[in-house]
Image: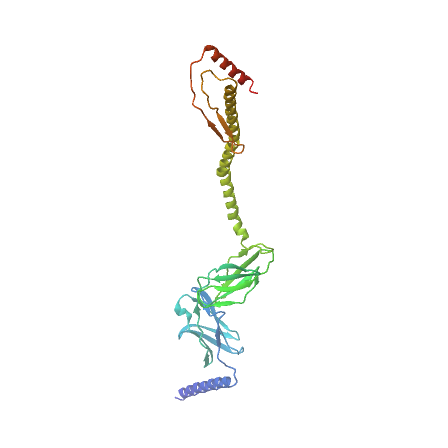
Length: 337
């Protein structure tokens, strides 16, 4: 009987000692609440993470216990070192909340709850550049947007790898815009933009966009417009060569030949007119009425002719008279002067 009473007394004394020890540690701040933390509180589905539970007292032999939504996850013992719990976040229930309990003898304390958040990573952003020129002012409007990824998304613009804008945060699916004044540098310039949300180490950069040189009196889009202009000039040249030019040559050839034809015609008409006139003056056929001469008018500039013919009258002549007329006509043809 006395043995049982002794055991009860020893248990009571040990419990009292533990409570006094726990109370003493709390009063002297030797045993404080643990901290539960992770390198990040945002994760993607299927990501592996680590939760770290630690206590400031490095000399105590501590038992660490991890809970998720009140459910026991794991227990580890350590002296002076924080405990690391490795987890895999694949479902919504794996997000937490988590709590860590540290225990020394019968004295224990809990950490504040910790919870993860699912975040979708950003995709490669798209950069668009608009060139604006107003008299002497010349500036660029840079626009950058990532079409996928959890909001908010932070955007940053770069020129030749150097940051040229502040961080622009967007809580809506719309492009970030930055106006960049420019000067005539005479060199090509390369631009990029970066998109990043709360996921660490998941920033994405756009493809580089190169703008032509703006030095001197050249415009930024001259090189882009040069090829269409060259094609237009080539097309016009081919049309002139194969369609207009042959027609021009044909008309010129006809114009060059026209004066020679008119000159020959005028000469022939003049000859026959002179023959008829001379014949009429020198000798008239007996019994033949007066006849009208053939007149010929010639304009020196237009080479036009006007010929008038008289109505012939015929009568019988003797053989001798006809022979004389033929002889005179032949002599005139042989010696026109």
